[in-house]
Length: 337
Ligand SMILES: Nc1ncnc2c1ncn2[C@@H]1O[C@H](COP(=O)(O)OP(=O)(O)O)[C@@H](O)[C@H]1O
Ligand SMILES: [Mg+2]
Image (cartoon, rainbow, N blue to C red; front, side, top):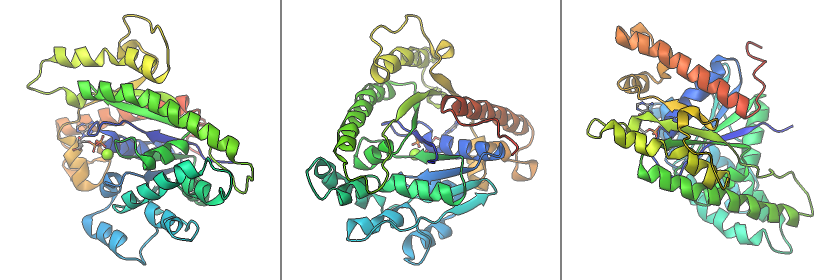
């Protein structure tokens, strides 16, 4: 049995991806689904959302400190095998596999073995390296009997992300309402297809079957529209212009539909998983208290209109988590297990 991997991916930064993974991880755990959140972005923003700077410094500087995702895969860049990942328990149903600012050093190792894995012999090591993230994540999930793995990655199409996507069952794509997000989406679809095809060739080349490999499904689960790009200095019309182009571009680029229906807008598109609202000052308040915004209390300063916003946010993330669970075919009936 493997644990489903849901990766949040977009090759444009600043679309609220890390905040989304952070809040969804908390929301699923609120619903008594056991989550392992994995920070595979070398910027390690997700990890920083959970811990203060002293904790982070100790985690990254001290060789004896816990095994982050990088420390777990690092022995492979020399002669060793994977090390066991160590999880931080955040709450009874939420665990973090910490990111690492030195993870980018693994990019080169991954790049090197990508062509080698199509060769005729000595395939053990290339495949071990290419699937290191998958093995480490699955080990982590098994340790705590997790229901799902939620993955945050950086905004690029590099070798680390290719390896993460190969390890992914479902891809959720957060998008902003601007030209850059739309262009990013146009690149994303063909890239996912290319990675799927290339991985399939490698799977066919893996005759020895000394260990299991991920299937490289990376099935598109849908997209999310981010409202934070509604800027005061830009008219709403500009927001609508870009946001309303998303459904057709998503269908053409990601799903290869040749004739997407006309007049689709995100609000009537079945592939739109929801809108990421602009939560304004609630976001920094949550960051200050290292809590998801929907768990802020009056003691944290969430008073007056903030208190209402906290409740609204709870509903928003609850609806979104159920939608994602449905699309990713997670068992939601176990709520309250
Ligand atoms: N829903 C939101 N409402 C308001 N601000 C947000 C929201 N989501 C994210 N932000 C802020 O926007 C910035 C970028 O968000 P982040 O989650 O780091 O994006 P990404 O991971 O895509 O780069 C951060 O400063 C974050 O605090
Ligand atoms: Mg991020």
